[in-house]
Image (cartoon, rainbow, N blue to C red; front, side, top):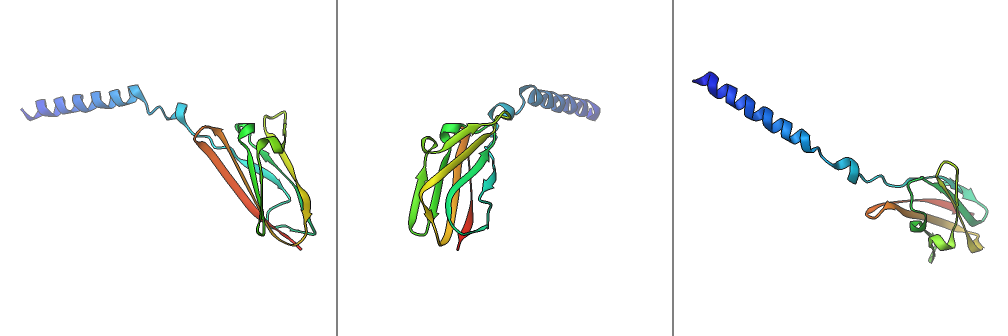
Length: 133
């Protein structure tokens, strides 16, 4: 009697395992591949004489019109939307992004924050500090 139950349990467990594999997890089609940012200019933690221009590279999966840059200079905050930035596609699909403040900043710390998405709900933000002497 016991071998019969063992065989039945093995068959039931085996059928459940096959059913689980048949449907899969579905995560590959809904995966979130967040954009990445690199080649920041000026570089992070850099000491500068003045600050006015900035640039970086966004990964090829970045939606260009979703890019936003916030620059905090002491009490002053500057917000750049994609329309206010210069965005140039590279052959690789990456995006070169650059911008310029209205006037140079001469002294203190500057926080540069970048935010963008690759598809709705798949957002990434990054940022760094530079010091202006």
